Length: 158
Image 1 (cartoon, one colour):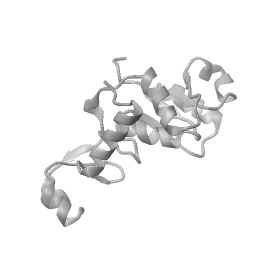
Image 2 (tube, helix red, strand yellow):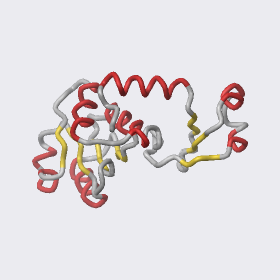
Image 3 (cartoon, one colour):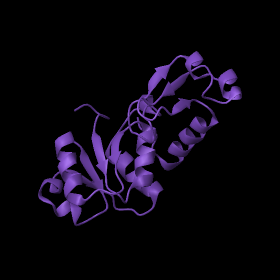
Image 4 (cartoon, rainbow, N blue to C red):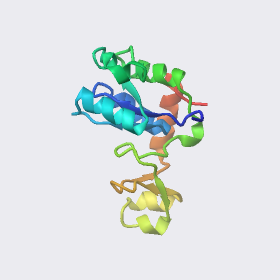
């Protein structure tokens, strides 16, 4: 598997980490109300590394050799831990839906005219949409803020 192609399944304790990993472009499944046995089964079936803070979960037979144990409670420190262990290039930043985890699809500007605020439509040229939830993304100031935050916590990828 090439660098940055790892796929993950985060346990219910790692919601904030999941969000930031998706922002960075990682494929991370997260389901808040899933049992350990089902999480392990799905991770194995889907070829995903389990991200967890649960010491009982990593004692399960298949999870024993297929997990990354996140030691920190603080989300910023969790991000640093995972980002130092796994690398991903900057070119994947904001390429996944932060809600659905699916890769975003580029769309024609005209197709989002009625779906975005008029100011956004008049100032932005590139738009993406999640194929599942239909959420629309564009490179506004929020993108710059996320990039700065990633640099502050040391998760710039590369």
